[in-house]
Amino acid sequence: MMRSKVLSLVPRATGVCRHMSTATKLTTVAVDDKTGIATLTMNRPPVNGLNLDLLRDLNQSIGEVEGNKSRGLILTSSNPTIFSAGLDILEMYKPDKDRIREFWTALQDVWLALYGSSVPTAAAINGHSPAGGCLLATSCEYRVMLPKFTIGLNETKLGIVAPKWFMSSFLSVLPRREAERALNQGRMFTTEEALSIGLIDEVAISKEQALDKCAQFIGTFAKVNPLARSLTKQQLRAVELQQLENERAQDLERFLFFVNQPSVQKGLGIYLESLKKKAKN
Ligand SMILES: CCCCCCCCCCC/C=C/C(=O)SCCNC(=O)CCNC(=O)[C@H](O)C(C)(C)COP(=O)(O)OP(=O)(O)OC[C@H]1O[C@@H](n2cnc3c(N)ncnc32)[C@H](O)[C@@H]1OP(=O)(O)O
Image 1 (cartoon, rainbow, N blue to C red):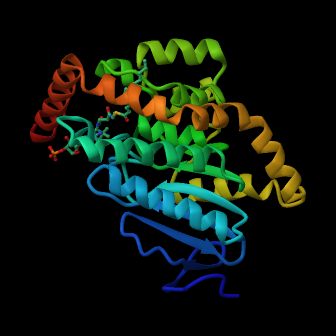
Image 2: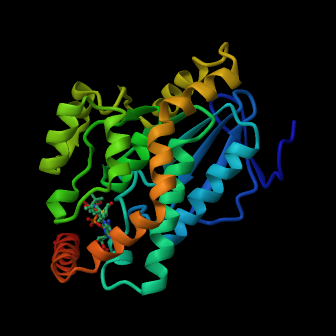
């Protein structure tokens, strides 16, 4: 059955996959007709850096999945080695004063939509997932990761501070003691370390297997009343969601104040240079 504007038909392992009405270019949504599960793929080369445009497209795609009665949402990346490199540092370095407000507001929107999503969510982490990438993954209810990649909130290593709501997602997955130590250290975990600490739920040997495992997780809710499940999830997550809703404006001002500090700008500039030098070598 056609559930939205269909742009193309692409066969997948589980069923016929319908590409939905994503007029956007940096994300795609494909709904499997057999399972009813939507796969949301980030596609912003080279590293899925979360800039304003990708954040806007993520918002639109999450909204689309919420609206099209999908049974669940799997978040993944089209890049074979990077889930997301986190926030695009170019948005924060020597920022345009209007754009950076829109950027942070769009990031808040993405977190509220994903962490608060009414459908079951899972991340197929098919590559590195630092900082904002880890935020996206930990906002989902389940995580499956491929071997030999890294994940974590490395902000302190960059001389920046993860906001409270980044920490909320992290704390919804890790025990407090582990989360506190990792956040203070800015620690990046290998896939194997992430599994042993509980930051991810499973390891998969391929992206296909990761998507299947995510679909299996979402399938575990098949016999659960959807309204009861979604109200339960929303109650469990309500405190953190409400806190950001209540403090959105202050959170934005705190971010702007912090990011515009000369020492923070200097640190971001040095970090960007080091990334570029690494890319050249
Ligand atoms: C009191 C409370 C106050 C609170 C105030 C709030 C304060 C601010 C909070 C901000 C929170 C920030 C969250 C973030 O997400 S910051 C971003 C963190 N991300 C990283 O550290 C990742 C950096 N990248 C990497 O480690 C690697 O690139 C990666 C492992 C992802 C991939 O490696 P690979 O070797 O495959 O690719 P390259 O390193 O060669 O990169 C290719 C090009 O992409 C550029 N790049 C990479 N990452 C970023 C990025 N995050 N932003 C912008 N650009 C990025 C890299 O420079 C290369 O570019 P060129 O090809 O032009 O050289």
